[in-house]
Image (cartoon, rainbow, N blue to C red; front, side, top):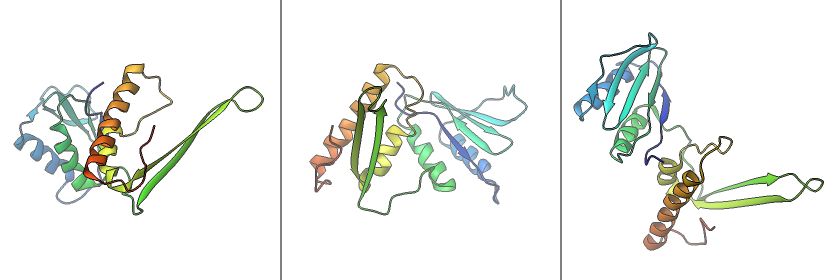
Length: 169
């Protein structure tokens, strides 16, 4: 599993164009322009560390996954221009539930709940992103996600951010 997942942004037209500001930032921070564009829908491509940023003429910016944590700085810069893909929480904690199983007739149902302090939102979002549970992943993928969430949980406890038990497994 890569340490920074792939990501997509939809860029609205602004003056000056957001894609030009992003392209300039990437190039000023070590990116190299890839002049071999083979798809007519692409406006530009930039290799940045071990990832590739591709901007499509219809306004979509896509970046491939990476093992370089420095790529998160690029994500943060782009988010500062276009906003996060999620709405930041305004409450003290985030609570979620999910269930799996077949039910009474065909078998057991398992219900799981989690409470996360909103102060950990950005850090968890950068690690997990949108974890698509409907797509088949290897056991290693889920183990790595759990390891990264455990590291955040441990760091948050050491920093004293949690007043109540949260991020419990």
